[in-house]
Amino acid sequence: MEKQIVDIEFEDRMTCIGQIREDLGHEFIISVLDYAGDGLWDFSEELENVPKECISGFYDTTDLEKTGLYERTKTGLYELVDESDNEYVLPSDTDDDSGSEVSLEEEF
Image (cartoon, rainbow, N blue to C red; front, side, top):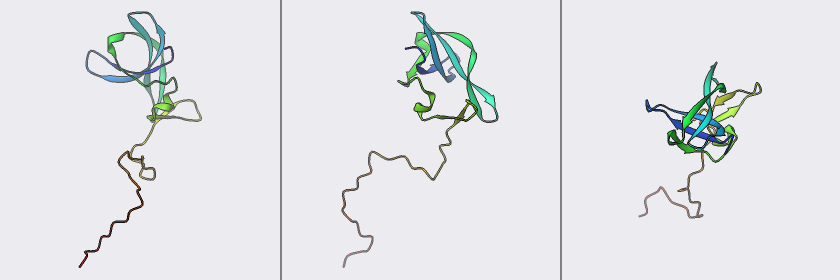
C-alpha cells in the first residue's frame, strides 16, 4: 500500500492527489501533490497524517504518470496532461467498426 497514489478529500471538501508513505492503521502518512510553479507539480516533502476515511479514491498504481493525469518532465517534476489536446482522441467503448457503410444520400 505504500507509495500508492490516492485521492484525498479534506474536511473543507477540497480534493487533491497524494501518495501514501506509511500506513499507521487508522490513518496514512501522505505526501500531497503540490503546485511547484510554472505549470509544474511535485510531491511535498512535508508529510501529513490523513485519516483513512478521507481517502476518496485509489488509483491502483504507485506511478503518478499511470493515472493519465500527469506526465513526468525531464526535471523530475510533473506536468498536468492537457485534456484539450485535439490531436489525440481517446478511444470510445461505443465505437463499433463493424464494416457496414452508412450512406448519407437519400434513397429513391
